[in-house]
Image (cartoon, rainbow, N blue to C red; front, side, top):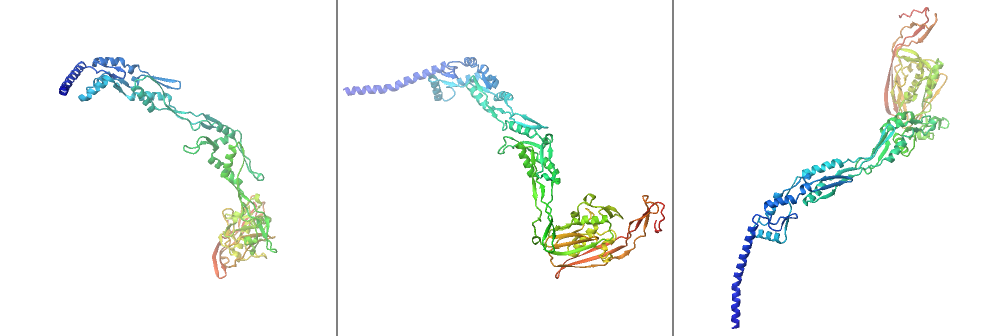
Length: 613
């Protein structure tokens, strides 16, 4: 019985649950309908814009309330600082404007902008936990950019390296400057954050600073002043040379200095260097170099025919060249260490043959040829010139394979070098000139080279036949010697030959009373000379003598100033043989012009009938 009652109770409970759920659902729906009716045009409870509660506000009420509560657009303060400078800005100055209507619309849409379940959840969440929405704003970042660009105009400055320069001899120093640049992208980010949270803030400006690579040039400035504090003196280390010293004043030195610093990217570009303007100094030193050069000169020897050894008659001369690059380096070093006196740097030039050289080393072991010419009747001035010119070749050496230039060895023919005035051929006449008789020396050398079998690369004949060059030892003239003369006129007309052997060639010259002997010492290679001459051909008689008045002569005085000579053509051929081999053949053609005798006489003198005007 009891069990049956319990079962009935359970069944009544089961039947009551659906009814209760239905009643509960009806109540909930009635409450929701009532809630939606009450808040039909109002913002649901718990909805905020930032910290402004808009619960139950109509659209108009919310707009008004937000406009009054959120005055940040016009009343907010953003303060920017850098060092002791301050810039104030309102949000509106940065392009920030809050939109109350859009913000209200955003609040009204909470719980109304989705499906029913979604809307229901949003309403419940707003009621119990609240919903905070950001205000709807209009932000024109271009205005913020312009604001910060204006600030940058007052802050930014370029980096400036400390500068060092010269104005004349004055050293000018400009200090370095730190570069500054407002980091505008960083400031826009900071401003965005503050505006989004509608905060009044004080923000230090983000400024990027770039220090100069060179900020202090005091040490270099002192060095420059030291360099220009006294003249620069260049000295020849060889005090016996008689050259120098050379003094460069500070005003002349200043333009020859360069102030530079390393280029960007180099290992060390953090300082200035004070160096010479090497191009200018090269020009200066190149001007000194020729006067300081000493050419190396081989020793001069004679060959002792008894001992067959070389004997020094003039010691070798050690040569030198101004080493311009090394001198520039030394000047740089001295100036940078505070020095003002610098010794020039020279490159030593050793001669090919020194006093210790032996005949065996040089291949000078015997007399290979000697030649003698005669000049009977020469006056003292002509003999002086022959002696002076021949002395230039005594003991002189010619290297193997070298072309010897008589003009180079002779050098300048002048009174200062020991020459006298004597008769020379100049143009179409014979006149007094410095060095008359030197051609006796060139003719003797030509014949020595000719009969020794050396190749002759340059030879010039005289304009007319000269009796001295056809003389034999007894004073007679040998026409077969005609065409074996050579003239030299330094530096235009030369006589050259080649030492085409493997040995050095030593020349010795000996002057007799009226003779000149030229000796060649070397090592014979067995060569021999076969030669022929036509002798003078196609003879053209000399013109009749010419007489001309000379007001400097007295009446009755007649003086011969030029001498007659017949014209002629001469062909000389030579074949140089070594054993069965012909080394070479050559020929020399000479055309002598007919030459007129010329006499000068004093005014009123009776003269012979020359047959010429």
